Length: 102
Image (cartoon, rainbow, N blue to C red):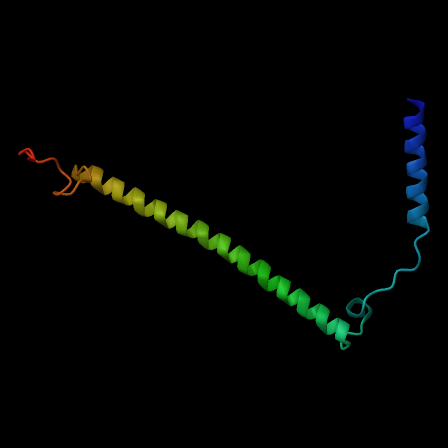
């Protein structure tokens, strides 16, 4: 029990030292303001490509749900129409015949 508490205290001290000992963080070319450098241009293109990919995936997901909703509404309308007309949904070729097949 005692070793576990000592170990957690030691881990906390090490974490504090790592966080406080961090040096000065340098910003990249885009954040620092040199957007005309090759690094800045590449970073901007990377951001643009990621935005396009995310939007395409979201558009695909949305179009799938629109497809499902439309199909569900179509099937519901067909079921409602068949109940109103009393149609069982079978065509003349699907209905059982009065004469047995030999």
